[in-house]
Amino acid sequence: MIASLRGRLTSEDLDGLVIEVGGVGLRVHASSAAAGLARQSPELVALQTELIVREDALTLYGFADLDERDLFNLLRGVTGVGPRIALAILSLHRPATVRRAIVDGDIAQLTRVSGVGRKLAERLALELRERVGTPGPAPVEISQADGEYAAAREALVALGFGAAQADEALVETSGDAGERLRAALALLGAAR
Image (tube, rainbow, N blue to C red):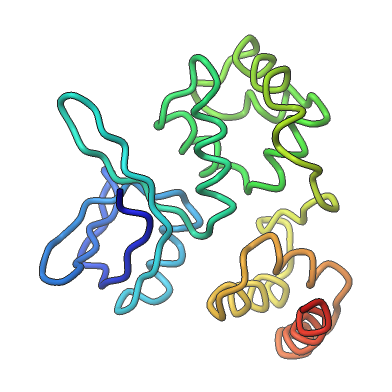
């Protein structure tokens, strides 16, 4: 199984990313967070991956961190959720948002994903409520966050912290991106 890859982004299209690893171009169907990371540093892309083997295809899916990959596999365990729908869920919502929606039974949030109707959203909430773990604090949606928050979050992710870790550390910070980054690093360092 291919659990992760590190290489250079050579192209991106509607079918995903092509990452060159050791002279071989691998097509990776990536979550929006993983695609964003690849665009930020195209010369050194590092993704967590899941290889899905079918009778007629080997398909590689890419994720920004282990949390995304683990949730992808958990979602695929629900009847009616294949890899494409699981990836669509993670491309529209961050893992903390998905977990919170499942635990809270927030059907409206889950049905915002193309391909997820009311019955499938209810099945997700019912089957995974006990298995997704306790969600952290209500996540801050990046689309609503200010630019300084987003810049500090991107810096933390680039330093190797998971997106959920970055959000937890940044939620109480203020100031410009540098101030937020220093405060978050201090919190993350104290937590180790």
